[in-house]
Structure formats: C-alpha cells, structure tokens
Length: 114
Length: 117
Image (cartoon, rainbow over all chains, first blue to last red; front, top):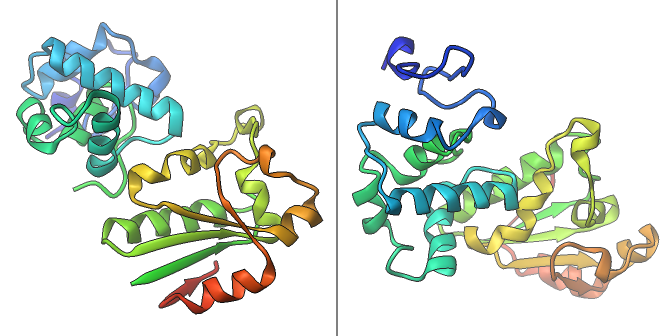
C-alpha cells in the first residue's frame, strides 16, 4: 500500500502513517471512521461500530491498543461469547480485527499483533 | 514454563518498567505462565493516580489493571517494599498478593526462569 492510497479521501490535515494509522489519535472523530474503513474496503455496520467503540474504550482504560487475544477476551467479558470470539470478529474485519478495528478507531497499531 | 519478572525500579525514571512489561506480555502470548513481582521502588509502578500525562509521559502502567486479558493473573508485591516505601495496599491499582521475604524466596524457587531488567 502506498502513502497515497492510505491517505485517500482523508482531510489533508489528518496525517497517517504508511499503513494508514492516524499519527495522532486525538485527531480521530466519528466522521473519519467510515473514510478509514472505506480504504480498508469495509462498509461500517452497527456491528462494526460496536467493536470500534469497545476498542476505543479498551485504549482509554489500558492506554494501549489491543492485539487480537486481549481484544477477544475483553469483548467476551463485556458483550458475551457471541461477540467475543475471533470468528465473529474476522467476519467483520477480514484482514485482522485488531489491526483493522484499531485503525478505524484512530488508534496506534497494536504491538505483538499478527 | 513458569516465568517470573521482577520489577524493582520506579515507573518513569527509565524504560525498564515498560520493557519488562512488554517482555512479560510477549511471553504470556506464548502460553508461558507469567508472574510479576513488584519489589523495592518497583512498588511505585502499581501506585494509583500517577498522572504521567502531566509530565508528558505515557502512563503505560494502566495496563497492569488489564493483565487478566493477557493471561497474566499472578501479581505479587513485597510486603517489605511496601513498608519501606510507605505505601499501603489500598494505594495500589490492582489486587496483588502481598508476600513476605520467605514467601518471595519460595516464589522464586518455583520458577523455571526469572528475569530482572
């Protein structure tokens, strides 16, 4: 992915890294989420939004972006096993739920994430 | 494997606390049984209300409250260190088992590997 594609359709003052993660998480707003998602070929449904909001809550609580395992456990705890499982999350975010959901949520790329 | 990480330095005077935590998290990912022991000035890592942001620092220690999500359930604190640093249990952000020196020796002896950065 080139810089141009990751920046596609984002306002010029919103800077992203070469993978499309916002350089400054404070610049995120709900209006940006569908634009970032479109660059990932994802059209946000209410199920996507739910995950995006919980990923942001995770970040606010623990000051770090969740990788897949803690994300699954966190959602299982908060929303139950129907949503806290990787199959469900991969259906929503096929290229990696932790990576894509954190990107859409405007957060840094999770460490230790496949 | 049973792994113990000993954190004996305050949270923000160096990167050692953060690096130890990163290392512990990485090991927990690989299904090792990871325990953390806070001793010496390391007990300050668990202090509530750190307000690191005021000093322009990232408050990485908040992750200590979410370690169960990373399969790290065993947190220990030295009783001796709490006394020396004049901290009480209710000033810690997590529920940790408080151990005397004898219990700490036993804990260390149960491990396959012990790390102290």
